[in-house]
Amino acid sequence: MESLRCEFSVPFAYDVVFGEDVFAGGVIDRITSGGQRVIVAEGAVMPLMRGIPDVVVMDGGEAAKRDSAVFDRCVELFEDLRLDRHAYVVIVGGGAFLDAVGFAASVVHRGIRQIRVPTTVLSQCDGGVGVKNGIDAFGQKNFLGTFAPPWAVVNDWKFLETLPDAVFRDGFAEAVKVGLIRDGAFFEWIEAHADALAARDKAAAQNAIHRCAELHLNQIAKGGDPFERGSARPLDFGHWAAHKLEVLSNFRLSHGSAVAIGMVLDTLYAERVGIAPQGTVTRVRSCLERLGFELCAGFDVHPESLLKGLQEFREHLGGRLAITLLTGIGQAVEVSEIDLAEMTRCMTEVLAHNTHPCSRA
Ligand SMILES: NC(=O)c1ccc[n+]([C@@H]2O[C@H](COP(=O)([O-])OP(=O)(O)OC[C@H]3O[C@@H](n4cnc5c(N)ncnc54)[C@H](O)[C@@H]3O)[C@@H](O)[C@H]2O)c1
Ligand SMILES: [Zn+2]
Image 1 (cartoon, helix red, strand yellow):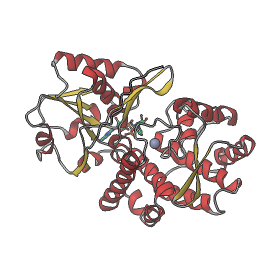
Image 2 (cartoon, protein in one colour):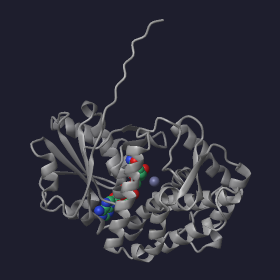
Image 3 (cartoon, helix red, strand yellow):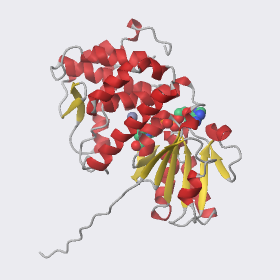
């Protein structure tokens, strides 16, 4: 047998810029100067886009990626505008909108340059600064999607001011998450500033977003697997249960709230099987509660249906099961086996929402 080998690597680099009033301030014009461009924004951010010409507005929120309507509209739009591969698509919106429009930009002409302007805390510190996009299909989250590093990301504080409290808070679940698995000092900082963060203190929120984004970018740039070819999903702590809870709640439970519950569940489990020291779950729970998270689903969750989330999590990634568990504050380990009986006991304990007051019930 004879073979020809083709081997190459492609360097990627992009900046995540932090600013305020970036459209009026000319930041976007500078990044896109000399190129064809289109700005696509979700309706919720339009009050902050007054005076910006030629903005194409579409519906945002989770519905934007639930089916292919926004994706299809973007593909048609890019064709109508005769955008080429060197054009810039400036996407302004929450994580769901960035995912749907970014997916369209990444497949038209096999990829147009995308500039993301995330407008929620969660997207500014997590999804919006990363390399993934996609839409749901066949009832599965992110069934269709691509890995497509952005041309640039611009985090504008101004957009966060119009967020409802619950949406604002959601992003801090991801900050707690990266602190817990990667940076104990950051988690301790969040604990010390939980009241300020809950009160939307600007300096505290900006610091949390900055560090959370930095830790996510470190994982992409230095984690050795930016396009997730292996089985590991090291930043998905608390996420297997979260994804399933979101679906089971018919998306009434937001991603951040679901992640908060998922982290408590997996931390309790880690404590019970002796991986995490006693007292860890109390600390995690109390930090999340002080940030304002309600650690209840608001509906009856059957352990068997939630457990299916483990299987689905593995299927989405391929390979063997890889669940991230805390070994302490700021340290995590990956396990490939879960004691289902113990996990079921932990679920019953965490999700017995009649033991907590729950406004979602
Ligand atoms: N690509 C990734 O790597 C990645 C990572 C994490 C999460 N995600 C995805 O991101 C989505 C969640 O993102 P999200 O938390 O930003 O939620 P979201 O996009 O659904 O936005 C939350 C709500 O806030 C509204 N909104 C957005 N900006 C606003 C503003 N400035 N003022 C007022 N309202 C505004 C939206 O219309 C929506 O109703 C999920 O679909 C998740 O799968 C993707
Ligand atoms: Zn998440």
